[in-house]
Image (tube, rainbow, N blue to C red; front, side, top):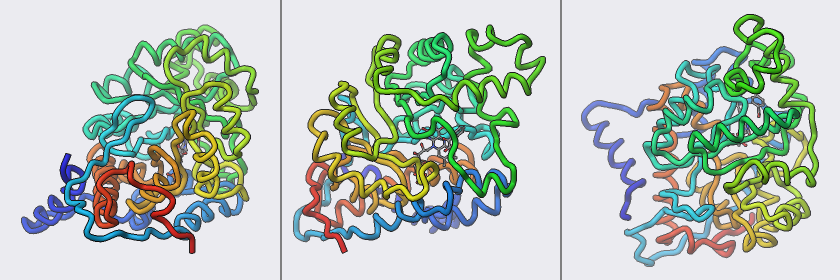
Amino acid sequence: MTERFGSYQNEIYLQGFGGTLPLCSTDATKLEDSAKELLGPGPFSYVAGAAGSGATARANRAAFDSWRIVPRMLTGATERDLSTTVLGTKLPGPVLVAPVGVQSIVHPEAEKATARAAASLGLPFILSTASSTSIEDAAEANGDGPRWFQLYWPSDHDVCASILTRAKAAGFTTLVLTLDTWTLAWRPSDLDQAYLPFLQGEGCAVGFSDPVFRGLLEKTPEEDQPSAILRWIGMVTGTDHTWDQLSFLREHWDGPIVLKGIQHIDDARRAADEGVDGIVVSNHGGRQVDGAIASLDALPEIAAAVGDQLDVLFDSGIRTGADVLKAIALGAKAVLVGRPWVYGLAHGGEAGVRHVLRSLLADTDLTLGLSGHRSLAELTPDDLRRV
Ligand SMILES: Cc1cc2nc3c(=O)[nH]c(=O)nc-3n(C[C@H](O)[C@H](O)[C@H](O)COP(=O)(O)O)c2cc1C
Ligand SMILES: O=C(O)C(=O)c1ccccc1
């Protein structure tokens, strides 16, 4: 594969020659600024915000800045291959679309737009349990694209089993169990505006379309929305599960299982001992434990310890191609990206998400080549220096 992603750079320049500028910025930081103008204060703060003082969100970025790439020259890197293999499946690039709930607060087409954009690039789309689109509708929009399902573990076993069965039937291949958000953290930016999209019924589509969940209600969500919302919130938050309960998921899910939210090396080792297929080293973009270590700082020792037993993925703070390279060099097989494409969604629905993802992949491809590498497999910690 030659220049497939990097050629987006030429495309942008050539369109500019014809008088057309990119749909939105190619710089993830500027995208956040312009999204602020597009979105209302509640939705913007919800997406951009973090837990507590924001210390961990800032640490996530600072950790990337503390590593620098040491480029190599005269290596013949014109021809590059950005593919990677995750859970036995080859991906065209090392980027997955992170699970993000309540996308309807950003754009009316919500998860459908994102699912289409991901499919158009062959990147895995991960549907959140807290999405504003049902499992079946998101799958239809995603078409032939690869798709994974993220679980916020419902406290009711029958509802959980029903959701997993639906996800499998709708073609979601991999289960991502998010561990770090069994209740929402202290998020001052949302609290100060008393803004919780869930309370307005956003993010309830998976539950409201579930026959088993509906069967538990005295009145349907259409007849009594407030009660249904509270029931659904109560079912997917407030309950902390334990390692020994993983067997329940294995009974109801016959595909790969990935644990998202791992930061401690002992949890990574436990995940490997339990035989799960992958982990996402993540602190939820700094949205949960304020004061937690930067996710990138957790990555190297975890990858070194368990990388040969399961697939190590990474997220929290990826904004540029250099960030992707650094995470891969420190042991991740691929990265998940959250806020940047959410801002793309705000700017232009499917086209906005596609633009942001293509920009990140182009930047990754060019940075890889200019650093003297032909494939991601060549990257090791020796290509970086901590400053
Ligand atoms: C608005 C928003 C909603 C999110 N919703 C979910 C979710 O429903 N499930 C989940 O596992 N992670 C969720 N996340 C976390 C992301 O999957 C991911 O871990 C995080 O955004 C990565 O950090 P980044 O935004 O710096 O890329 C959400 C993140 C944001 C910004
Ligand atoms: O806001 C989040 O980080 C998140 O994970 C979430 C949780 C519940 C509903 C929607 C999103």
